[in-house]
Image (tube, rainbow, N blue to C red; front, side, top):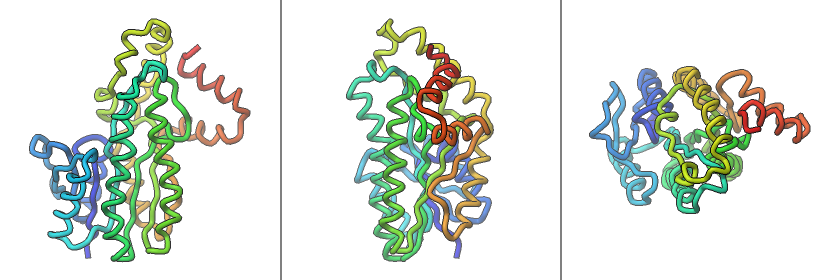
Amino acid sequence: MNRVVLITGASSGIGRACAKRLAAESDLVYGTSRHPKEEANDPGVRLLAMDVNSDESVTAAIEQIMQVEGHIDVVVNNAGFGIAGAVEDTSIEEAKALFETNFFGMLRVCRAVLPVMRVAHQGIIVNISSLGGRIGLPYQGLYSATKFAIEGMTEALRMEVRAFGVRVTMIEPGDFRTGFTANRRYVVGAKEDPAYKRSFERTIKVAEKDEQSGSSPEQIARLLVKILGHRSPRVRYSVGGISQRGAAVLKGFLPSRIFEWALMKYYKVM
């Protein structure tokens, strides 16, 4: 039986690369987008309308898949976006909007699909986190906060559902060449507050350069294929440049003051 795969945020970037790769592996892939009619459909990928910010939209999409296929074997939670700006400059409304999509959107999908997987006593959920969920990134603090939240939820969830035959893991990408850079939102206060302006501009230039010179998201798609082949996947898989993956490891060994100094120097915060 071919696996039935649901991938959120599959119209571009990481989600699209994963959808195309799994379709090529003969999986039955359903990708979601808020406006699927406006997106180019890749061979073997069925695009569905889903807004992860809406309980009704998430439920309707999963019910639609169940009516056709009768089961869902893999869920890749990828939908999300980034914002940039100093923590002080980020309004509560901007922070809530980010969490609504990046964290609560993922939670909605997990809650909607878990009853299906528990009854089937099988399934795997792959949450797309970030190396920014292991390291707080300057001027992307709220984005990191959503990914830190995903890390904690994923660690707990995998223990809770293990007895039901459901596996949960996460992928932590570093910087990859996708539309993430162009689609990043800037908090309104970033353009109005002179206190952080110069430091903010220097830091974001470094981040954007790293993103635009990053590898193709196909690397993440290949990793996903390997993860789905494991009977007992690890809790997390980091993927990206050696220096970025190494930084996440070094954070656990270096004194915090030294690690923080090195991070600030790299991103030109000082």
